[in-house]
Image (cartoon, rainbow, N blue to C red):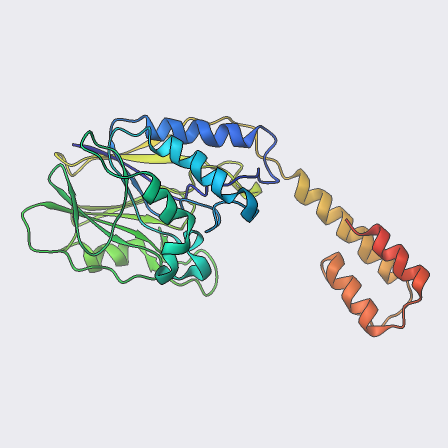
Length: 308
């Protein structure tokens, strides 16, 4: 039986600044592509970009209902874990107050298949495969002793090499996780790291699909990816490219901001107080100058007028 693994959908109701296309239309196209696939779908967390669903609470309910319409098109089960973006204050015990909880309620399982189901320490069996879940902040479950193939889906930072992606990162190198859990699970699917990679050790796979859509300027070269896995042939996990348009991610908004900050730093520097440390952003510069000086009203007004 075939299964399709994705992660980090970060569904949102407003376009990210880096996108130059109609992002909302592109987001719905990708979600339809996913839900119209015939495989069992597995999503490794961060279904929503915000736990409320929308950036404005007044738009949350309509947006969640729109998402549910797309999810209900799936003819096969959609198995999910919650990421930190899905959880109020990143707390799993507050899941019931989240957009994800409402999505699950709006997309129940039915006899013909489909439905959104939350994975947990109790397995959900599909096609002879026991799926276990570890949502953000939840412990990794111990699988039951059954003859079924066992798959762990988790939302926690995992990286492909020995070096973490940034100083102080908390999580696991992929090989370390495989060494710890390889005897318990036949396959591990991880989310949170927006890079795409896979690792294999001791005949077991770990796949990290990465970001479902490109929402940051540093993802200009990112290829949105899903992993197709045949449970009848556990040695195969094939990366497939999710349809997307090239040339729609821009750094222009960052460059404009950097230019603005440089101009404001020079402007405040010219105010003539050498005791003020110039920060890297306009907001830092403004706060430091106002705190350190008895700023006259005309100058304060000029600074306020120049703010973005």
